[in-house]
Length: 291
Length: 244
Image (cartoon, rainbow over all chains, first blue to last red; front, side, top):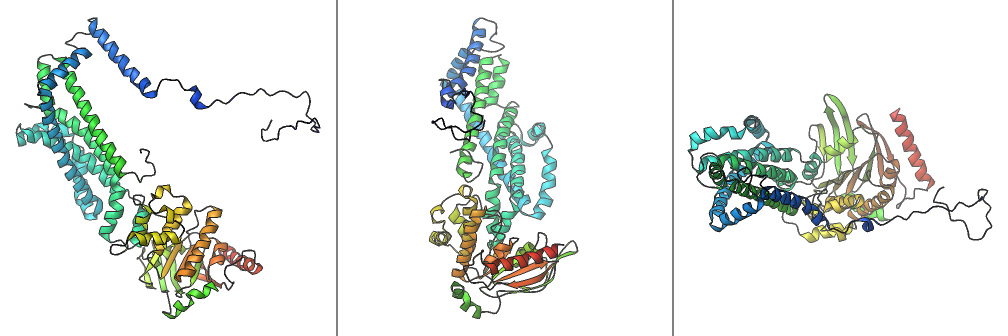
């Protein structure tokens, strides 16, 4: 049975007792994996599903089963999208919204990372900062919109403030956890190499916290878009959210869908930025799989 | 013959390490108890003992990583440690790891020389994740040697290596020591390794140096030499007796 045996020699001088009727083994070819793959490339197979869905949607709209004031047809949406870009209203709204996100993201990153550094690097900082941040974190930031409107009026400030608030906490948590999660053995090795306190922070702690920080940034970006949607649907007079509120009043489902697509697209773009950052900054990681 | 290369160093100072009345307690339980230890400059000392006997604690104290101590501990200003795990910073390329913590702005050539010395000259720009276990351990050794230490502390540096790699690494350490002439304290649980490399083997038990054995065999040593076997058997017996 064992395949490690040498094949029987061609001459019939076989002394093995189990020569018997020589059962011819039924051999089955082991096919290379490549020969069994279908010929369709993977990207084509993966795009087929969404395209089928789109076709179904168009069909339902075309036959009247899906009324335009429930959901506009894909063709109509593409048309409206082109129109909105053509007259510049979509691009200007996108610019306004992007500005709000960028402002909030910047402020939130500075505050979140700053607080995390203070409480991650210094024992006293942890005692002073961590407890209040953990308390504030449990307040749903969207619930603060009324308060922010009272404080900041209805201009840009409350919108940026909401985004800032949403961005700050995930960054804080992840950077802080990243700093505290740095391998104690590496810190000890750094000490034994004669690194100063600042040298340890610069060469060991901060690079070690970087993966956590980037994870935090990813969460933050996701929340930033969410915060933007909330902020722009309250008292906005420009931006994508404003466009959507306006469309709602006129039952323009086509415009609403265009705005949703824009939101999704922007979110995708932001994710791409973080992925690129990770690829550049984390190539040292053992688990790194990108190229 | 090669042993003689580092002998002149002994005239510089009487001690490379001087420890007296050293006590280190964890929660009131002394792990090291009024320990006394002298190491001459250029001497290769191996510290044996079963796990938990305090040998790694002693090494950490000598490295300056553990300072909750009582007693006198004198060590050279220039000392270096190689741990059981290589402990390379994964986010720094090998040559940057080697130079890490050196004062001033050391040149890359310095790292390359050190890496050449341990046979890793071709991996200077590699990320630590791409090194094999033996290579990583050699990089860690290069990082220790580039500091030109007067005292090299080795904490079971071969413990995690496979048998073949370990033999190569042991030979490398022996050669480097003969060339550099620094004092070495090797913490290990491998009796054969201790007899192979050390001038003097110390057995640690109950927080003190319980036994001391000079190894006067010529280098390079042959593990098939009957005297080698005798020394090893004697030490093993002692270790067994103390474990009982």
